[in-house]
Image 1: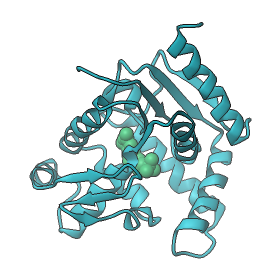
Image 2: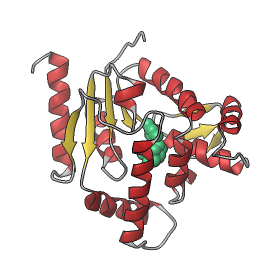
Image 3: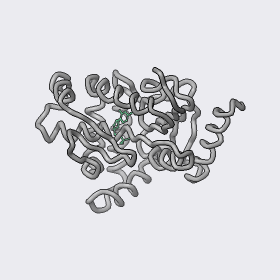
Length: 227
Ligand code: DC
């Protein structure tokens, strides 16, 4: 793969705190942070705006061929020069991205871009298949997980903060999230799963700063070769 820098792969289901943890970790290490979910979200929004049948492999394939995707160091995301950063955070986009992400042409298109981003140097990359497919040879692999009740509570608070919507019922959020996780974990291509050599961390039991400290410790050990 001809990689220059250190790659940290962080995977896990939705609402597990991946984004917060990955971002904080990247700041502490002065690494680039890449949110791969944002890429699936942007393709989902742009394809549906363009009237593409998002259940059709052929339509998605030719759509992706016409797209140039750019993700800045701050994870602002652009398709063919148009910015999607805010739009992709709307509540309906999560399930839409999950549907689009089952499709092989979309995964192939985004995985090669993600690999290029990793080749450049020190990076914390977050998603569902980073340790299993995008960088099976990542230097550090982390799988974050938490009980579904904890994740649903987190996701609701997140939506209240970032989305233009009122308070949503916890049960509704929990239902949607469970459905999405089921789809992400059971799809044929690159399902969400822990890589055999990933370190499993339960974020439901630890404050965010402790999770980050734990990951920093793991990174430090790998970098110095200490077990
Ligand atoms: O992490 P997120 O909620 O922004 O991700 C949105 C969807 O994108 C998620 O339901 C599954 C998909 N996804 C994926 O299949 N592979 C990734 N590496 C990242 C996200």
